[in-house]
Length: 127
Image (cartoon, rainbow, N blue to C red; front, side, top):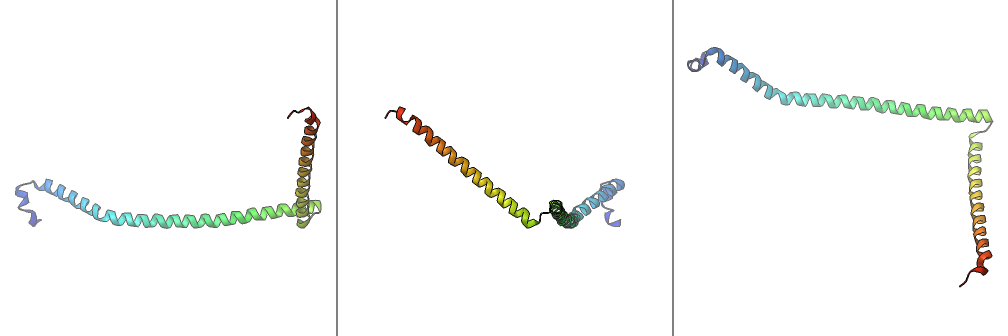
């Protein structure tokens, strides 16, 4: 500490040591803060990527399990009723066709009914 002997003439030795140590800590903090921030950011990114990869793997497993359960349910239904997949599909197609025919029939009867109402009161209407 011989380099600071001239400073001791103006400031007490203990006060200078305290402020000098404080200055060293502040400069060290300012220098290493940047490096620590970069390191912590890199570590956080790696951690998040690892978590994302795990979630992606779990999601694929969950979707496969859900698909397996759906397949098992369909196979169980087919075995209970003695129907195969093709038969169920044909039944659903037939149901849709029957619903379409019923809708067309309802519309036809409704339009015929509306036309009949107009014909009944046509002679009463004045032009």
